[in-house]
Image (cartoon, rainbow, N blue to C red):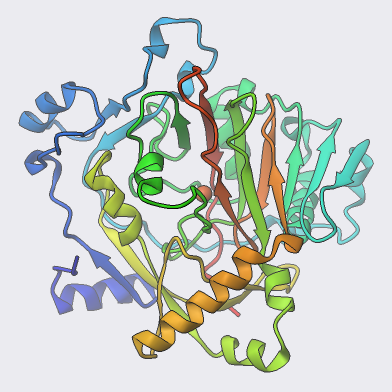
Length: 394
Ligand SMILES: [Fe+2]
C-alpha cells in the first residue's frame, strides 16, 4: 500500500501537522467499496453503497439481535460508520496530572482498599467510584496510573451513568480519540467498542487466524500524531472465564536495559503506521479516514513523572527510521522479545462486572487473550474511552 497524494500535498500536510507524518489515501471511498464475500456487516450495506447520503452508521454483525431483547447495554452495541473524513487535526495536550499533588493525598484519602497486583505493575482498587471523583482526585488518579502503569477499579457505576456522562468524564483527561475504523456506539464515534460473541469473523478472529496464539501486544493507535494518554477500558459483559487483558510495563522494560543500550536507543526514532491495522479491514470493516504513518522517538518520557519508557510495539511500529531493514528487524525483534518475555513486569486483568481498568497508554502495552469458548453463548463486550495525549517526546 503506497501513498497516493502528491508531494506538494504531503508537504502541505506536514506543515499543517508540524510533524513528520504521511497520510495514505489508498482506501476506496464508500460509494465504490465492494465488500468481500465474507464481509461481516448487515445486508443493508448494499443500499448504502448504492445511495450514499453522507456518513451512515451500520450495525456490526452479532450472533443475536440484542436490540430486541433485554440486553442491558444496547446503547453500547457496535456500529461502524461509512464516511470519508480527513486526518485528525493536531492537538495540544496539557496532562491533568501536571496539576496533581505528588503525594496524591486527596485520592488516597478516598480509597479505602488498594492492593498491588505485582511489584512492578498494576494496583487493584475497591470502595471508590470513578464517577464521584473531584477534579483534584482525577488529577491525582491520573498521576497514580502513570506511576503504576495500570490501576483496576472494581464495582464501578461509570458506564451506568450513560454515554454522555461517560464521555464527559473521559474528556476531562484529553480530547477523545475517534478510531480510524473501530466499532463505536451508535452516534458516538469518539468511543471505542470491543464486541465478540459467537458470530465469528470479527477483526479479532481475523487477527488470530493462522497464529500460534492469540496474543497481540500493542499500544493503542501509536501511529497517531497524538497517541492516547490515560485510557479507560470499561467492562460491559465479559465471559465467566477468559478474555483477560494482559499489560506490560514499558518503563521497567526500559530500566532493565544497560546504560549503553539505553543511550543508543534514545538516539533513534521509529515509524508507526496505521496500515497494518487497516489491512484487517479487507475482511470485516471499513476505514473512516486514510491511514497515517508518524515518526516517534523509540524512547519517550512521561510529561509529568519524567519516567522513560520503551515506545515501540509490534502492533503498529513499522520500522526503525534511518537504518537498513535488517538492522531495523534485528533491533525491533530484540525489543519485542524483551518486552513480551518480561513476565516479571507484566500483569493480567480478569474482568468482572463493573470493572474499569485505567492504563497509561504512554507507559504500558497490552493484549487481549481470545481463549474463551464462543459456542456456550459467551459475550465479551467492553467500551474504551481514549483521551489523546501529547506528541511523544524524550
Ligand atoms: Fe488495545
